[in-house]
Image (tube, rainbow, N blue to C red; front, side, top):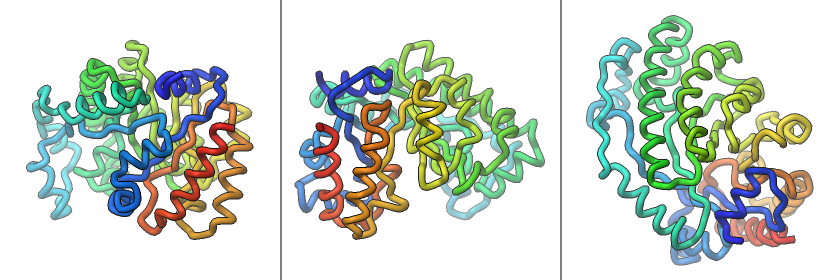
Length: 321
C-alpha cells in the first residue's frame, strides 16, 4: 500500500497498520533542515512523509492593487471590496501546483492536498482583522455580499484544482481564538456557513476530500463543519481547549484529525522529556483512529533541528508499531 492509499483509508475510517505521518516544517526551518539533510525534501523522504501540502495557486485579487492597502494600512470598506474586480485566472497560475503534483503525487505516491482561501481569513488582508469584525456587526448585508463573491471565486478555483487531480481541497480560514471563536456561533451559521456550502457542495460533488484548517477553539462550529461535509480538520487544537475526549465521543465517525504534535506547548521548547511524554500520550489516545500525525502549525524557528529529529524519530517509530 502506498502513502496515497494509506491516507485515503485513514480518512475514510478504515483499518490500517501504520499511522500516516506529516508535518509543517519548511516555513521557518528551511535553512536549518537543509544544512542537516541537504533539503526539506530530503527530510520528508527520510521520515517517509505520507502527504504533501501544496501551495501555489492563484490569489483572488491583483497583488499590485491590494499591496499598498496592506502596506499602508489603508484598508477598504465592504462597498469598495464589492467594486474591486478579481484578477483573471489562467492555466499559468497553476504551473507550480502541476509541478508539485508531478513530484509528490506521481513520483512519491503521496496524498496531495492543496491550500485554498477561505472566506473570513482571506479578506483580512484588504479589511484588516479589527475592521473586518466591526464590519460584520455594522454592515451585515454588505459583508454577506462580499462573502458570496469570495465563495464563488473559491468554488471556481477549487474546480480548477480538482481538474488537475488533487486528492483534497484544503481550506485555510482561522476562526478561533484561544478559548472561543472570534465571532458568535450564530454569526458563523448566518455569515460563514452558507458561503462555505457553495464551496463544499462543489468539492463533494466531485468525490474529492475536503479539509479545514482553523487555528484556535472552533468547538461551536464543529457540528456545522460536519454538516458541510468536511473530511479532515487541522489542527483540532487541544491546546485551545478542544478535547480529544469530545472528538472520540462525538466526532470520530464524522471526520479525521490532521494534527497532534503541538507547536504551542510541546515542540520547540527544548524539553525532551515532555516532548517524548506528549508524543507517546497522543499516540496512545489517537492511534488506530481517523488520525494523521502532523504538527498543529508550522514549526517555529526556536525549535532546533536536533529537537525536530528527536520528535520525528519517535513519531516514525510509534507510527509503525
